[in-house]
Image 1 (tube, rainbow, N blue to C red):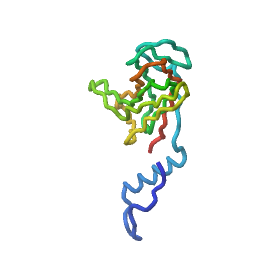
Image 2 (image 1 turned 120 degrees about the vertical axis):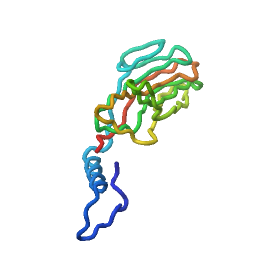
Image 3 (image 1 turned 45 degrees about the vertical axis):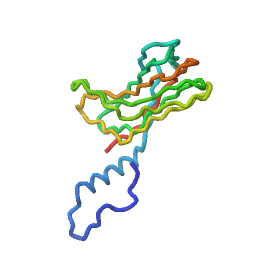
Image 4 (image 1 turned 135 degrees about the horizontal axis):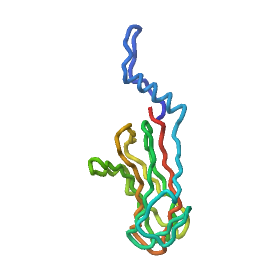
Length: 172
C-alpha cells in the first residue's frame, strides 16, 4: 500500500476521527515498515500431472495439457498481490498461469488471476506474471488454500518451469 495522494477527510478542531481514517493511517504505517515482500517457491514444493523430467530445480512438460501446481503458503493478515513463474519455452510452446483460491469445506474454487500466457522465446527464460485484480486478504480461520496452476496449452519443445515467486504484503 502506498501513501494517499490527498487527504480523505478534513477535520475541525473538535471533530471526532473516523475509524476508517485511523485504519488507513495504520495501513500506511504497516506498509511503510514492511512494503511488498517476495516469497520464493521452488519447483520441489510443487505437484504435477506428468513430466519428461523433474528435479529439485526444474520441471519439464511431457505433453500438451500437463499441469504443474505451486502451493501458495500464506498466513492470516497477509495479502496476495501477484505470482510470477519462471518458465522456458520454445517459440511455439505456451504455459498459462492462473491463481486460485480453494475452499475445501464449501467444495468451491475461485479464479483470482489469469490465465496469463507465456510468449515463447525459443528457449529463453521468461517470467509469467499473474497479477490479482483485487488484493486478496487472507483471514484467520478461513480454511482456504491458495495455489498457482501452470498449464501447458501449446506443446512443441518440452517447456520447463524453474520456480515461482509470490509477491504479498504483511497487510494491515
